[in-house]
Image (cartoon, rainbow, N blue to C red; front, side, top):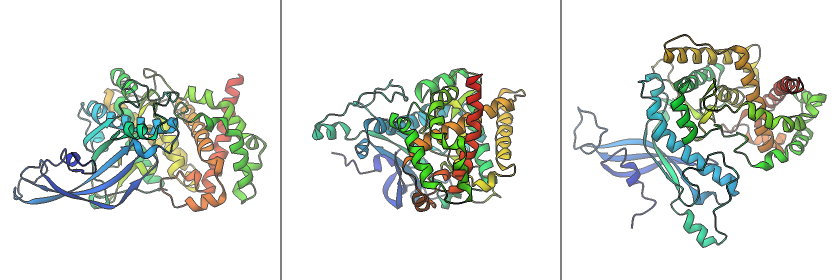
Length: 441
C-alpha cells in the first residue's frame, strides 16, 4: 500500500528522476490551504530539468512549492465554510489545468512570466461536491454523515494539490505587506495583464464562468456565510464602541452618517453585490484574480533585472470586474499616508493605463475604459469589501486585536492598522452616499 505521506509520486511529475526530498522551513498554514517548500534530489539523467552541459549522471537538487488542501483538516468549519475551502481548491486546479493554457495560447509572453509554472495539479472531491455544482452554491446541503467513522472514511484522501515552481528568496523574489506605492503599482500592472488576457473573449469568458466561477472573489456575497450579513449592524455597533475616542483619526466615528454605517452597508449589500456581478458576456466583464492582496504577489528582489511580479493563489478566480481586484489590493496593502495627496488616484490611473495598453495590444486597436465607468466600479468594489470586512472580522475587532495583528502580513491593513481603517471608513461613507442617491433617483 502506498504511503499517503510520501510525496515522491507528486514530485515525480516535475522530476521523473526523484530520489529523495526534504521539507524546507516550517511551511505555510492558512485558513484554506497549507504549503511547503520541498528540496528534491533527483537524477539528471531521468529529469527534464538538467543543463545540457552538466553530467547526466549527477544528482541535482531542485526546490519546488507544494500547496495542499486536505478535506479532513477542515471538519472544525461549518459545511458552508468547509465547502468554500474545497471549491477554492477545485477552482485553482482548474485554473492551472484548463484556463492558463488558453490564456497563453496567443503567445502572451508578458503574462507567461507573471504566472508561476505549475508542474501538476489535481483534486478529488467525489462524494462531497458534484463536478457540475456551481462554485457559488453556498446553500448545498451537507453530505457529511453524522457518524464520525463514516465521515472520516468519506473525507479520507479528499482534497487537492498543486506543485509549483519555487519563488523563494533564493530565486530572486519576496513578499511583503504593506508595500510602497511603487511596489503596489507594479502589482496593479501585473493584474492588468491578467484582466486583459480574457477581455472581450466571449468563448474564454464562458469557460471561465462555467469551470471556475460566475462570481469571482473570496469575499463575494454569494460565497459568504449568511450570518455575516445578518449580524452586520450589531458588528458595526460593537466595532464603533471599541474604537470611539481612541485617537484623532477615530473622530470620523462620531459623524452622523458613520454612526449608521452598519445599517447602511446592510441595506445596500444586495444592490451593491448585484451591480458588481457582471454576466460573463457583459461589456466590462473579465477574468478576475479574486483575492489580490499584497502577499499574493511575489516581487523581484532586484529591480535592475528583467524579472516581473508573479501572481499566486488563483483559488478565487472567476468572472467579475477587474477593478474589484484593484479595490481590494489598494486597501489591503497600502498605508493610508501613501494614498493621500493623490496617491490613490495615481494607483488607479496607473492600473487603468496599463489595462488600456494591454487590451489595445491584444485587440490590435485602441481601447479605452471610460473613467466614469471605472470609478463607479471602483466605488462599488470598496463598499463591497467593507461589507466583507465588517461582517467577517470587525465583529470582534478591538484596538488590542489590531495591535496583536499589526505585523501579520496576510491580514488586510484595515483590520490591523487604525489609520488605514478610519481612512477606509471615511472613503466608503462618501461612496455609499453616491449609491443611496442613485437608488432614490
